[in-house]
Image (cartoon, rainbow, N blue to C red; front, side):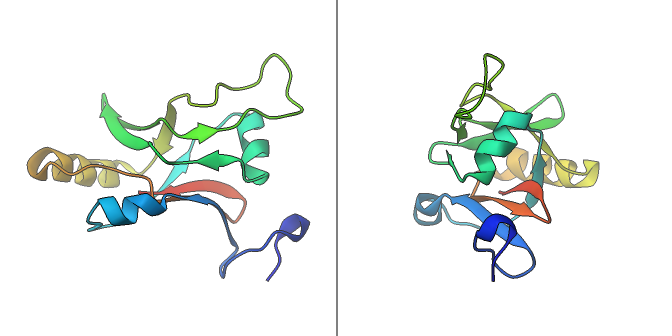
Length: 129
C-alpha cells in the first residue's frame, strides 16, 4: 500500500518514521500508549523525509505535563535561520486521565517511559511509549 508521495504505509494509514528496536530488547514492555507531539513546521517537514531517531530518548513529567527528551529530528535542509534545534525537548499530548494513570504507574512501580516508535497516523505525528 502506498501513501502520500509514494511512501509505503502500514494498514490504517500509518507511516512509520522511525523505531527504537533496542528498547524492545533492553526493557520489558508492559503497556503501550499513543501520544501526540507538539512540533514546529520544519520538524514536520523533516519527519516526512524520515530523518529522525529515538535511540537515547525517554519521557519525563515536568509539572503535570509529559515531555520527550533526547529525541533527534535532523535540521530541515531547506530551512533558514529559524530552523529547529535537533534534540530539543518536545511536549507530548495526552488526555488528563491518561497522564494521571502514567504518573501513578511511574511513581509507585518505578517504570520508565521509553518511546518505541514515531509515526504519522492520518497525517498527524504520534509517538508510541
